[in-house]
Image (cartoon, rainbow, N blue to C red; front, side, top):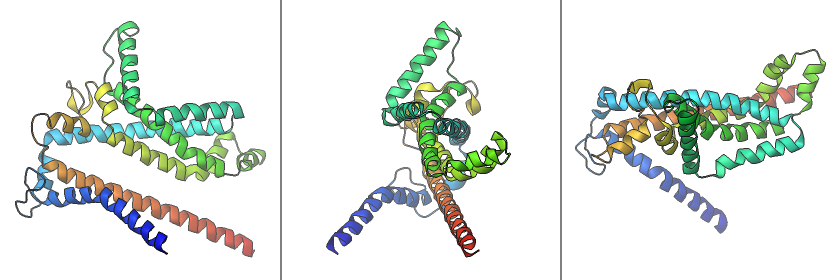
Length: 283
């Protein structure tokens, strides 16, 4: 009993430490004070001012575009890679699993420096031009996210009955039809988890963005600014704009709603499968 109470207290303490700074930031999004800790009265002014701040809106647009595109590419490559490795020979599958773990446990700065050296080398000796642009930034984010998609899809493949795909082929389905109607529905939760994780990693990234970005997107001829690089550049000169607190609140609420919707979807799916299995047993 004592251990149970101590464990619950410990869990709640960790949760408070994690979420209290976010809640404080959200609370100060309803005052227009420059610094967190100063209260100039309750107001919603930061929210309309947020959408009038062109610098933040450009950075937000760049961040969302990069996050969505890199998440789509990472999910496509990671899912197909996981399926291909799952149905490959054992030695090949183990090799791919080991290689996939390296970017996950490796320091992000190593990945960023490696990509930078690669792009500089290719630009000078192969293409003989400046390569840094949206495409190098996209490649960096895909390299960052792809292993996480792989490890999200892999457990769902292992939980799936491997004979389902083969049975579909034996019953006359083409490989593409079997993949679309049999395999993908079974691993869909893992694919969605990998997609959401890719978006989160891209939104949160700073090091790879700082090393691999170039000109393009909404910044035109200037270097691409994401939210992370904009904040880092801003704090060198002046305090972080108060509008960032409003943006942080909006992002947190959107992510919270997305998590709730995904959880409800998984609960509905598990309940539907359970009721379907009970109906089949009743027959």
